[in-house]
Image (tube, rainbow, N blue to C red):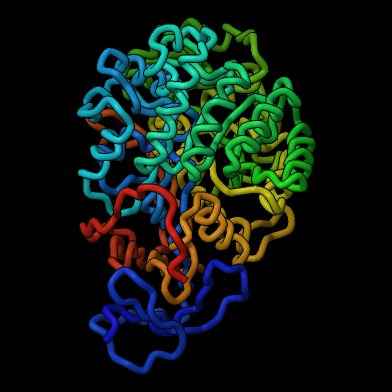
Length: 571
């Protein structure tokens, strides 16, 4: 007798093959039978033709701190994620000496917009080395499985101290120690090593991430550590300002380590077509036998702007900054004063970077968020077009619109992946044979990004709702964010509905599946605020055969485990 049988399901199994009708029987944590199951079970669920899909494997999150206080890793758990991987972009909390903890918090605060006060309240440091951090994670119950990578910034500062923070060149002794520290972390259970070479990655004090411009020698030394461990992956982010040099560093790391390497790939305003060239270089690397892949997003990397957010369209105006300390109701009342409004609108910003210029003045890229927002908006939905229709100045129009809903109105600003005003570039990136779906950044950017809803958006927009271009096969999308992601990390026991595989599953009412509006809540340690986005339409989510969500509500079950290293196939 199975513990659970899900009957009459429309199975999208994660392999990419066409959906089929079947019953699925589960015993313990394992899928044991697929087909027409005649025997009874301890519990049965009538799927009635709803879609049964694998649980989502989210390869790019930043729950490094939140995993120590939040057993549900929300919002990801609300979007069908059953495995979440953190420790990305070279930032995290191990290894660290006691004297370096404040620095690590300031770096995470600056890079990932997680308030330092929240981290100081929520993260109880009981470790210094990476194995100790894994032990601390292992002691916290979780509703989903979690895994982590060892971050370059922490490794460098742990080994080199302030010299590492100042980005001084590592000595041969430093390189040898870093290699051993990374090897130890991998052998203790880290799924990989991550690093950042992004200029925008700075601490809350404005200090660049320690790995920003380190030499290829440092990556080669660390790559030898992974080679000696014989397991683990490498994850990186770069601005690719010097394209061939940056890609060359990555190629060397992949070649020396012999391990899979993935990196963030975006369509950026400064280099709008560079992503195409980079994908061509990935093709060449694969032809040379290197396992290199691009991590891509399924929609724009979109910032939310508004009075509740970390950023406002008028944040550069002196008159606005004078009010920024007020709580929301007081600020709204002050902003409705015609004198204040006139002073703010008269202070025309002159941003010194393309990013800030667009943020404040590119009204053709500012879109009011609403209940049925598609994340692929038409030009006619922009502030520029709406203001023109009323023959109004776009800054004044945006100012007035911002005060709607008692100051809770939000604007969406597609920072990356929207240079041509649609998602065709994203579709090309997503369907490239050597791309992986990630970059949802769950747990990070609490004040202006809410992209941990990517898994739900992926299948609803691309397989059902898209109107401005070709849709994609649901079966291919499911494979991309379950089986493909699991395989890329060496987690061969999940991501597929097959006999012998781990019973991580989502039963989905696909016609009803949708995203709700982003909303701000104050549920972080110390009352810290963040934006969340929920979903509707996930009827059941199972982890290791245990029901963790029923109709969007947590059951309280905690079957999640810390993943220590790769997992062999159970298929």
